[in-house]
Structures are given as structure tokens and as C-alpha cells.
Length: 445
Image (cartoon, rainbow, N blue to C red; front, side):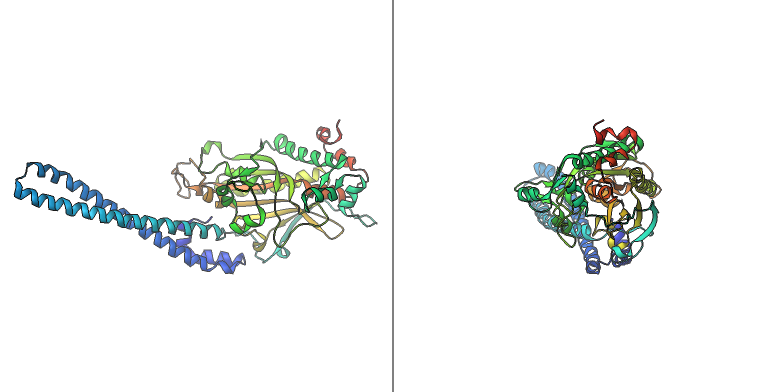
């Protein structure tokens, strides 16, 4: 989230950023945040003054008690009166301080909730537009195959190989699930295995299998409450949620941690199943395997120095392009406009999509890269140990030191559609397209 100091000193810039995000309903939150911040700081300052006064009075009483033991009766009465007056002031100050601490805590809690909702500052390079129709095509890689016959729906292709059973899944779990069978299931696993080994063997990333559940405070660190309600499945009567993507628990791993600068950058690739409600404007895909409740994904996560973040951002999208071009899938890079960046977390920094185009007029984003810059580092209190930053941040644990970049190496259900819609007649032939060293993942050889 935005640093409160930045908002305090640059309220107009924050308002303009909200307008660029086409979230004008949030404009009043800026003034409310400034008011709560002032209220919190005033209460904190008065508390500190009262604490100093209390210490002074307590210190003054020490010698008075010593004098009281040696004083005659006339002096004792006067000394005791002074001690009682000091104690009464201490008690009154303690009561006032308790009120102020409560007020400060309430203001902090309200301010934190508002700061979670105010969008992070977008990168200057992000094109401005209200929705994905204003995304900007950057470049294309390869050309889509356009046959002289109508391409069947990807589910029809899978069904022709007895590779998918959505009807049974519907009876077992409801809409938004499927069974994968036979060679289609093997293709699914082959692509995930290839994406995993591509990131480990060719790019040198560390492989991680994270927890598939997380506490509520981790959820709040990676998304806004409306996003949480629309996406997350909660475990009944427990403070646990099923992850919507492994980036949630991958970043949650570093909550309240100070990372030694010598260990940066952290280059991680994680596998996980993902669980999503898919509530909202997009909703479930009724027939296909795109917007569903359960899928698997290979993720790329970078935790790096601020000055390295854009370099890593560019590397991640190039890795996605390389991965899919290795499988002869044509793709294009789209730069996401300001309105297509998600509500809060992906509003920060910069984001793009790697998509594959189809002759049927449909297009799916199989990969996306997001530069969150300081957003989640601020929310999760992640810092490094750099003693002297050019930006003036020291080793005190200020979370603004860390930038976080993430991206998808592969989303399994998107890739299944890509393979199916490329028009292959034999699904195993697609496994044969993988580099020789990777064929064992799909063909059993």
C-alpha cells in the first residue's frame, strides 16, 4: 500500500492516480486518510507528553518520600499533601493516556483499512484507459495457424480423445470443475512439468511448493476485501483460506521479515493448485476450461532491490514468451492500461499480459507479469538490511526497500486450450514438440 508519508505530502498526486485508475468513488478516502492520520499523530504526541509528565512527577515523588521519613509532624503534612497531589495528577494523566491510546488505535485501524483500498501509484509507462479495450499491443511472436476449416471448441477436441468429463464433475462438485483423462491428463502434467523444469534448469530459479491455505492476515496483505470476497474460499470456523494463487503464500512467507541484502534477489518458482470463486463481472466459463474454480499454475516470484525491479519485470515476460514459443504457440504481449490493472494490488507499478490469438476471434491471457513495487512489501512489512539506500531508507526495517515482481510461467487450463486450438489431430504429438530432454514428462519415454 502507499506509504502514509507519501500520501500526507502528495495528496494531489494520489487523487490524480485514483482518477487514472477510473476509481473516482475512492477520491474522498484521501481526505479521510489525512484526517485519521492527523488524529492518530495528535493522540500519539499527547500520549508521549503525558508519559513524560508522569515520569517527571514519579521522579519528583522519590525525594519527597525520603524527606517524609525525616520530617517533623508539621512538615509531614505538607510533604504528604504534595505527594498526594502528584499521585492524583499521575492517575488523571494515566486515565487520559488510556483514552488517547484507545483513540490512537481506533484511528490506526480505520486508517489501515483505507490505505488498503487506495490504489498504489501506477508506473508512468502504464497507458491510461478504463478497461482492457485500451490495452496496447507491444509485439507479436509467431503467427497463429489459420486452417481452412472451422476450429472446434477446445472441449470438443478434448472430448474426441475421451480426455475430459465435465458432466461427472458437475454431479460431484458443481459447475466450474472437470475430470481430465488419459492423454489429455498426461498433456496437462507434461506442460506443468516442462514449465517447472524450464524455470529451474534454464533460468536458475529455486523451486518451491508452498502451503495451499493461509491465514486471513496474509490474504489482506495481497488483496482488498472486495477482491477477497469475490475470489477466496474460506474454511468454515477456522482462520484459513484456500489460496487463489501461490503468490499469496509465497509473499506471505516473508511477513515481518528483514531479508539480508546479500541474499537479494530471491528468484523463486512455485507450483500450486489454485481455488477461486470467480464471482463478479467475468464469472465462470460455462462450457470451457478457462474460468473455473480449480486449476494449477507454475508461478514466478522475484523479491529484489528497487533499482533492479524493472529489469526483472522485463525478464519475466520474456521467460513466458520463450516458454510458449518453445512449444510453437504464437503469442503477443499486451501492456495493460490503468483501468485493466486490478483494484488495488495490481494497480501498483506496471503489468502486462502474454496472450495467444485464435482464428475464432477469442484470445486468452496465459501469462501476466506485475510489478507491485512497494505495495505488498509495505502491507507485509518486508525489508532488507541495506545500510544506506539512495532513497534514504536505512536498515531499520522500513518495508519500502523491497520491490516484488511476479508472473505466471504457465496456467495449465489456458495452455490446454492453446494446444487444442492449434489444430493438432493427435494430442501426444504436442508432447513431441517439447525439447527432447523434456519429452519424458508427456510420452512416458
